[in-house]
Length: 245
Ligand SMILES: O=C(O)CCC(=O)C(=O)O
Image 1 (tube, rainbow, N blue to C red):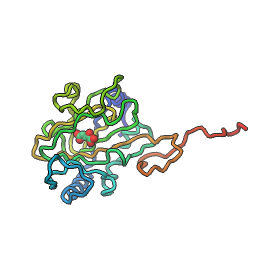
Image 2 (image 1 turned 90 degrees about the horizontal axis):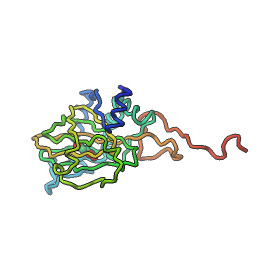
Image 3 (image 1 turned 90 degrees about the vertical axis):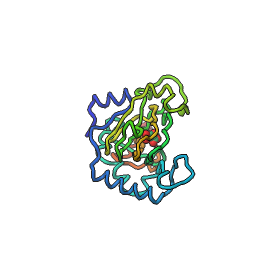
Image 4 (image 1 turned 180 degrees about the vertical axis):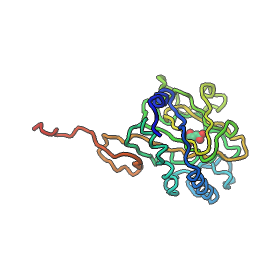
């Protein structure tokens, strides 16, 4: 569903938007089945929780998911996501494979995701989508976002390394619980992080990065970008300008 003008305004000012529609159940089931297998077989690249044991229970993050199984790209290019993105980045949309492109598994007891702003506020090109394979709650450490922080006019360390709950960013943030199958879009310049998983289950979500295709790039076939909607247009000024000689 396309975002309304009011929703686009909300996204631009607050920096995030929870989409009203969830991905279909069947797709979420298939995502979970493939993810179960990836975790059980501990298929690298993996980011581990801070433990030395390295069992399937210690998998914090599965990296480079798009190359692991076609179902991940199917979800990443689902119309529920692309139609909403269109209102934010226009019709020509690329999925990045060299930023995000991972699943946060967040097993029971998983440590917090420290406060960070994915990109600098002067570089507003990247939109993050979190796609929830499992419900995310206050108990299992749902994401918290500092509304409007993508518009900050001051400098602040992009990764402040402050204890999660003691940071002033915690007091400025809002928790965003999400349903299974839910999709959260946010401007990656927003400060965000999430608390320890205090539940006895995991809290899986795909983290994906999108941007508008750069219409001025002369080289169109960037291997780290997958065009998921629209076309790779070129709108640079040709030289010599037609009819100028
Ligand atoms: O899963 C979360 O709560 C945070 C995700 C995130 O910031 C990331 O994957 O970079």
